[in-house]
Length: 325
Image (spheres, rainbow, N blue to C red):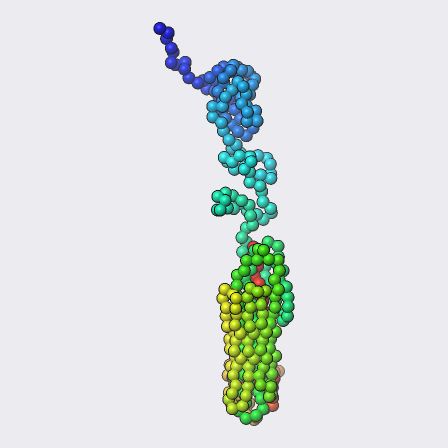
């Protein structure tokens, strides 16, 4: 019976492959083929034949354990992720991009970095305007305020009194503008103040940001004999995530031709403040019987004198746009 030496039935480890070494079957070596390190077993005696080239094993060798890429290539346009093949490389994004997780695709991607508030545009001149989206802006926070109502001055006659204008309303909205390039903007005018027998001051105009949200102007103050008088009612926001009513104006006290009285308080204040004030046949510094106009959608103040006085104008509305990336 033949005798088998079990100690000779084994692989023979020869370390890292060397081109000048003669290898025989069952020799095992380690070899780096490009950026991939693998172990190989010799199947045919060979000298000077590398185990593999370009990922293909030489006829004298078989893969024992094939490795994968473990380090980045020198291609600056790609990033190689450990365990990811060359066909699955992630292309470098544009300047300002960052590597992000795409939860829906269960992978990685380059994209814009949310950088918070980037810029602001303010429209505070009455009339029509256009908001143009700056590059890279994805969302805007818009605050739209209507024009303030005008104040009403003292009216000569029995039991006459001045009154102040109401403030414009305000709408506040967060809007996704990623697919929008521009939006029409309207800024409401302030209502003009009035006096005498006109019956009341003028209302403020409506402000809007496209069809997204708007805010009506405040009502002008009114006056009349025999206590029929009132301050202007504030305007109202609509379409916003938050819609605010502007502050209302107030009415003055009893007046006579010889003893005019001021309004009881200032005019209605808007989201931005800006309420107009009032004076009555008084001297304050260099100002005498001065009308005090509203600002930023605030109502105009009232005036009172022994003769007819014109109330203050309401403040022009505001459309304020915060721009976010």
